[in-house]
Amino acid sequence: MIFVPCFFLLVLLVNVSFAQVATINITNVQTTVMNKTSLLFGITFDSRTSLTGNAGLGQFGYYNPNGTIIPAVGALFNNFPMSTLRYPGNGIGVGFDWKKSIGAIASRPNQDLLGALGSPQPVYFGFDEFMAMVEARGVPTSEVQIMVPIYDTGTSGLTTTQQRAAIPNVVSNNADWVEYCNALNNGSNPGGGIDWAARRAANGHPQPYNVKIWNIGNEPWSGFEFGPSAANCASYLASVTPIINAMLAIDSTINITLPTVGNPTNPANWSFALLQSPLIAQGKVYALSQHYFPTERTTGGSPPNQGVAAVNTGLNSLITAASAKGVKVFVGDYAHNIADNPTTAQKDSAMQWLGAILEADFLLMLSQKSTIERANFWTYGNAQAAWHPIRYNSPGNYTLMPAAAIYKILFPAFLDKSVAVQTSSPAASDGNPYSVRANAFLSNDGTKLNIVAVNRDKLNTVPLQPTGTSGYNLLRARLLTAAAPNAESIIEQPLTAPYSMPPMSVVILEFGTMPTSVGAVMSNSQVVTLFPNPTSGVLTFSEPLRIIEVCDVHGHKIMSGLGVVQSLSVEKLPVGTYFITSDKGTIKFIVQR
Image (cartoon, rainbow, N blue to C red; front, side, top):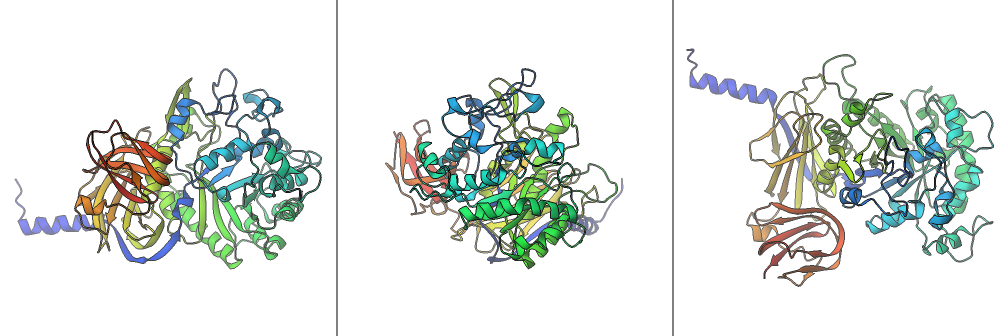
């Protein structure tokens, strides 16, 4: 037996703890870093949602032939957070034509959007159905991001990929799309020819959609399209300038975003040429949109990092260069990288717990940047896509993957805005410069403060020490883990101080400004009233609200992710006191019989 003096053991333990600790200090809760963090939870939505693949692949999309969502998918997707949506997703790369996706379902012509995966067929969940979903979910139509095609079938010399994405009369087609979305139905017909506003009204939507964000192409810098060099970018600009001018002629208030790639300080790169272009000098470009597909190594190696830390460095360079030109930055798409020609296991990995941890790390990184306006995740309405947040298993059987499920958890945790913090943590076991990333979020009224942290280390447990929460009381602490990196379910459990973060875990700490008694903490917001209260059946709200969760007096979650509603059935709840957390505040109600 070896005897160690108590004081020496205490010193040893303190040193070990200090060497491994991660800290987050809220330096100034009044200093806003990013407003409207909800726009980081954008969705890329594929236009091919209603298509059906061949018999060997089973269901391709998520909708029935009549345009209604498959019930088993609806159970997973109908309460999914939505703040901004990018459309038509990868449909733009295979020749999606919006004009063939509107009007009476029975009269819609076929589109060949599946290639070898299936025969040409109509798009039953088309553009108007998509916009109806957006409006029904309470998303402002001004937050929709339309991706327009950029290749014309009449152009010679197109690559095979460009030919696949080409449509007839691409310049006028895109101008017509702007008119269909935004023109008044008053006979003004700004583009001449077909009165697209009248056509929209005939299709059931007399009022303009008022779509403001229009992205010119998807990934035109790809080696299969123009290519990533500055000279390639010059060719792209020459091709799309007539498209942009035609669209702005219909509605000069729309915001144009251009896809970009590469180091913006290198004159040989696409992004450098884009920032020097006449379109930006003329103020016609609102934002640059770049895609990111980082990887996370499981072992050491070279280069030292290909993950979120590497994206952070490149993104900072793009932000600086774009800001100098008065241009914003979007993250058009992001996800965990998948290898070319992937196996089924490789496809799944990006959507399993491994991908969810990368996603949490990525979102926290973005929320620390004031000039990032929005980001979009691969939440495709496409069961056979490589990135499949809702995976098709068999008819009527679907799995909500962790990379999608974590959206439902993190969306309310990010609150309205991020605030100034300082964080530190030990390097990760795989050589990544940090193991833990954390940020703090504040409600607009200042009554709620949340800390969200992710330990992306795959081997080490790291303690988390938050400071700077003076004036707030802890209401709830949660730990999110999974059984393994390839797990397909998230384990959520309460957490008590001192906070310990196991490998590949997320911690959410929720604080409030009121005393810790339940009645005071959960007092009515006075923004929305409900009646009758007490109730034995159905609660009705004075105005629609987005319900995040319903808890009992012990803080146990009873319901969550109910979406925007104006009434709520509680007849199955036991007698007692409950609290509704919503986008308008927290409201107490009582169930009695």
